[in-house]
Length: 347
Image 1 (cartoon, helix red, strand yellow):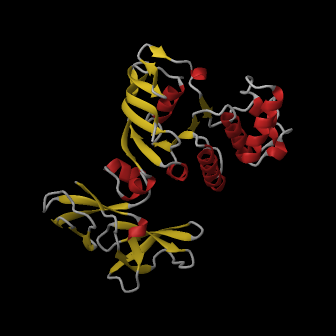
Image 2: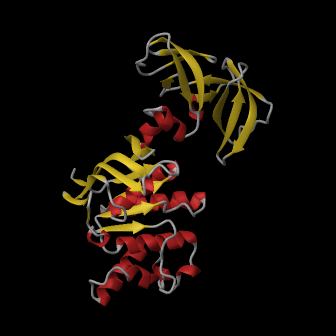
């Protein structure tokens, strides 16, 4: 595959504060990737540096093999052949839908502009709204118009900054999948910045989890969830509880719920103390299970219910049951541990 975008140890600052440091990133043509992390981790600054809106104080950014940013030089944003989808849509309120999409197509003749706009509006399912104005549309519709406008100039890369954060959860997930399908069908490279892991996972082939201006793990969504490299990623991705344990062999940990077996060799010293991460899907409802937990919290999630269980030792675990298995606070249930992807970190 061809590397389209490359960040080489870039550093970005606001005044005297360094917000991105030694950031490395390679994005192949046609890939969809995410930068995921909490507020203030530097992900939006990195995206703005790629777009040309922020200077770099160290390192370089290369696009199509050409250096577009380095200390003291930055190629103008409009010359980078990138498009950006903003969190607040950034549509022109005085222009109707089709004129918003046509706005960046001045290089084309008017009939060709409108033809291109119609194609994209049909692709996002809004060709029947061409005469409406932004205030007459729902948030999800405005975001799709914003996407169509960004795609209109046929950019090499489309940058998305928290693009679905103002939408409700159901609409956000639905639109994430739709955007992914559209970008894949057009072979356009996409980079999304978000604090929402579900959004990043739905859209991205690869995701970089950021902390304090650096990527601490660059991996598939599956591996980020099941094989986090460090405690920060394990805490940030998904849900789960840590239990303290002792390594009694390179594949076994003794814990307050018994001996948990690992599917991989644990490269820690025998006898060392570790924290074992147990996800809700590692804790299985089993009437014959020899572990008993008391339900102290429950959260209804539609098809499933997330229960928090208090163990006799005082620790807690999370577990997911199908929603027709409706238990009450105070009920005691039997469980077993089935941690196919065992994750443990030294204490």
